[in-house]
Amino acid sequence: MLLEVKDLNTYYGSSHALQGMNLQVDEGELVALLGRNGMGKSTTLKSIMGLVKPRSGSVKFRGVDITGLAPFKVARAGIGYVPEERRIFPTLTVFDNLMMGVKRGKMVTGDPDAWTLEKIYSHFPVLEKRRRQKGHTLSGGEQQMLAIARTLMGNPELLLVDEPTEGLAPLMVKEVRDMLADVHKAGVSTLFVEHNLKVAMSLAQRLYLMGKAHLAFTGTVEELDAQPEIREKYLEV
Amino acid sequence: MTKRMAKWVSWGFLCLVLLVFPRVFGIYYSNVFVAFAIFAVYSLTLNMLLGYTGLLSFGHAMFFGTGAYTTAIALDRISGMPLLPVVLAGFVASVVLALILCPIVVRVGGTAFAMLHLAFGQLMYVLALKLRFLTGGEDGVGGFPIPAFSIPGIISVDMTNPLNFFYFAIAVLGLSTWILWFFTKTPIGSIMIGIRDNPQRVEYMGFRVTHTKAIIYCLAAGFAGITGSIYALFQNLISAEDGYNIMVSFGPIMATIVGGVGSFSGPIFGSAIFSIIEELTSRYTERVELVMGLILIGVILYAPMGFMGVMGLLKQRWLAARKVKLEGAK
Image 1 (tube, rainbow over the protein chains, first blue to last red):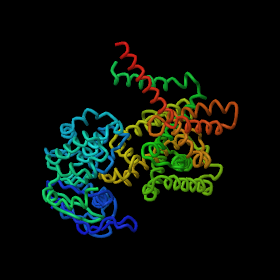
Image 2 (cartoon, chains in turn yellow, green; image 1 turned 30 degrees about the vertical axis):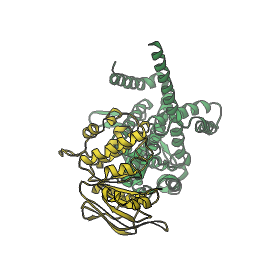
Image 3 (cartoon, one colour; image 1 turned 135 degrees about the horizontal axis):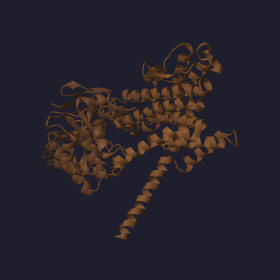
Image 4 (cartoon, one colour; image 1 turned 90 degrees about the horizontal axis):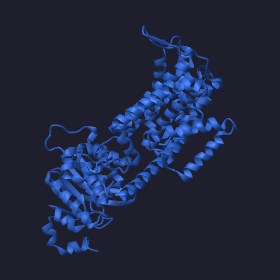
């Protein structure tokens, strides 16, 4: 197992934001974390990354306990994180943004499967076209593409993506969706948080559905499809 | 002419101008230029923190002063000290001071960083006044011998000659500028900007923000020490007022804001603007700071992007107008 989250409890002050969260991601899997706003989806990713410290429970990556480690240690362990709102570096060029993703500034050499600039450009040609442009001049979809590509430059074993299609135009949603599918096809295990059910259902192999601060459903897309009452209770407005 | 060639030609022209400057403008203006160059490079070191890393320091003078005092005391107390090692000593002393402060200051940012530096800067000011046996108190350290620039058996150049000192100061400050510029072009230069934009984002990309900040901090301190060292040699005197006074900390902040925060050459233009204004206004009034303050208010209100930002805006407008004109001609 690649990632194992067990009985995770996270607080924001006195607010119990994650209540005994359990989650697993296997090698090569594409897993979606769904739920309405404020259910704790982003908090789950942030707790895994060490951006908020859980009070109890454990996060194991490849069997090693990484609970509450500093974010840079979690990143170095092999987990890449793409935060919500496409947080690129706006004043750096596309090229510099990508180079920032290279872990400790050292490019991986000798591994044919490693993500390099050439591989990124061949998967996402628009980034090559815009490589000299400043990050803030890119469209929303391109910024999201850059944020994901930048994380891939660190050659993560597991990619955590928070709300990749949030605030994007429908055409861009499709592009980002295809990009995630492409990244998964390239062999990167991914856990993503998504509010767009259509995108999540079309991509994910397994789903986790969150109710208020806890897990409400675990299963495949087909299993969720077969239980409309769950969808109605936890997803539909 | 290719872009690269044009760049080399302009650098060559600049070197030629600097070479003939003292002969064309005389010693007085050469000294004005050295004072400007010291202030400009000192401002560049502050911009490494403020413009590139987003760390506002109200106590940058402590590194300038430490470099200056180290050079002055070394020359005053140790006979036969060669020139380059005393400049290097200014660098090392400031780096050591930065290393001592690092464990505290790299963990904070924003107001806390600024205020901690204000406190440490004032502490150094008071120490310079109180440790009379070392610093000479209010009198400072002055009249120390200025060693010749010598490479044994090859060359020995008298540095008490203002013309020779001009070339020496410009060479050291020019080299410092190049090293600082080069640093901004390395991957760590991008990380600096990343830390300025969002330190947390840099952290989850696998970089240890505190360590990176420490490297940048020590580098900025070290080169501020070199400018202090050159200043002490230039004036043949250093006192608490010239080395650690709060205005020595605020001066480069003003130059950086006026020149353009975040742009590498902004502080150089800011320093040039202030040097010219100081030179001109001091002929008519003693209230130079009043004029500078008014300029700063004007810049903050009407051109917060500074000189370089305004230039960039004008360039963009000119390019857009040219494009429209060319399309119209078609």
